[in-house]
Image 1: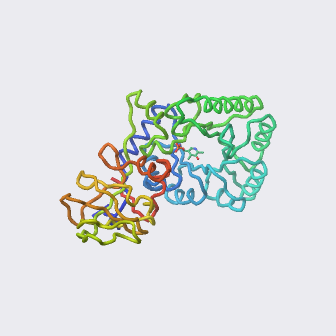
Image 2: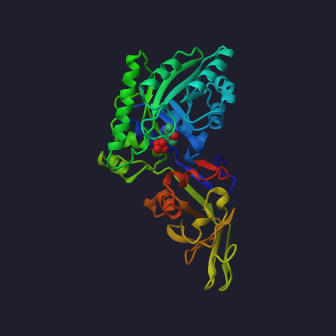
Image 3: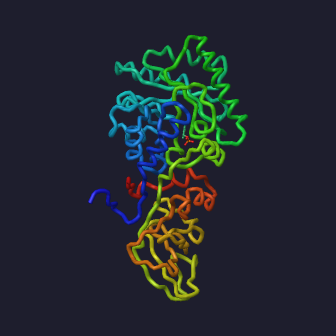
Amino acid sequence: MPNLPTRASFVEVSTAALAHNFSLIQEVCEMPLMAVVKANAYGAGALGASRVFIEQGAIYLGVATLDEALELRQEFKEIPILILGFTPDHMAKTLVEQRITQTIFSHKQAEHFSNVALSLNQKLKVHIKVDTGMSRLGFLPTKENAHEVVKIAKLKGLEVEGIFTHHSNADALFKNYALGQARRFMDFLDELKNLGLEFKYRHMANSACALSMDNYGLDLARAGLALYGLHPSIYTQDALNQKGLELQHAITLKAQIVSLKTIEAGQLVGYGEGYYCLEPTRVGVLPLGYGDGWSKILGNKAWGLLHGQKVPVIGGVCMDQCFVDVGGVPTQEGDEVILLGDPKSGTMGAGDVAKILGIINYEAITMLTRRLPRVYV
Ligand SMILES: *Cc1c(COP(=O)(O)O)cnc(C)c1O
């Protein structure tokens, strides 16, 4: 049978939901999309998710590292891929040969990359990064840096195809900071235009900006989290719902009960003294643990959904297994427990897992490791 996972625990990804979310974001921000598929597509599986987004018309893929870009390039020969982060100088040849687009935020590195590309009789595509308020990567939008960018654009081994900035607070209720960033970016673009420099792709919007802010007539949006059916904040959700629109849930973590036993009162469950059975307890073993990104901290805190009923995760989560108390739920070995899913159905959502762990929903899905098979339905 196709699609049967190799393990009894897996991440199920709804391709229909990914496709829905893709077109919805595109419609709301009225721009073509770069699908951000870094970190294994936030847990959705880099190749499988990218395939859906390419089919939906993504004009670019965005990743954080060269290795991520290379994994995609092996499978997808044509789609442009932008590395949003830093790539070491000594990997320049690979960038050129694999036709990967690189983010640039230093004149020195731009010169090096240009020279390597020239030595190969080719050009490296680059996008200039501008730091308008995130204080992370990018040229600060000063007059001097405008001239630096002009110098970079003159390098013979580079094709300066794009320019972009990144929001630090676009998911907030009040957009003052984000609007300030947008304004600085637009002003910098004007300044560059006056110096004779224009770009094929000017971009700024992450999910939050794409869903809840004006797009200033820019050329593309870089959507990540929202593609996977999650909101950066309650405010971006409100903004979307006010338009009568909704993202669709896409990522579900499932595990089968591989062992079901009644454990006597007084017995421990798992390592240490994480859980004592105070009475005879029907304990189901699920074949996943912190080695899969299902954190130790979730033990005695999380719950799963079994035949529509909540069952608590008991004891400490081990590296490869964890436990649920199935209580009086009629069940047998082989039955499926949903650990992370659509909260509307009663399961824990990524936000619930995040709350327990003191993290954000981005991390709750991204932390699911590659050891879990991805199943596309
Ligand atoms: C991760 C990332 C994105 C996507 O952000 P989301 O909030 O997930 O939409 C966009 N741009 C850059 C530079 C990023 O690093």
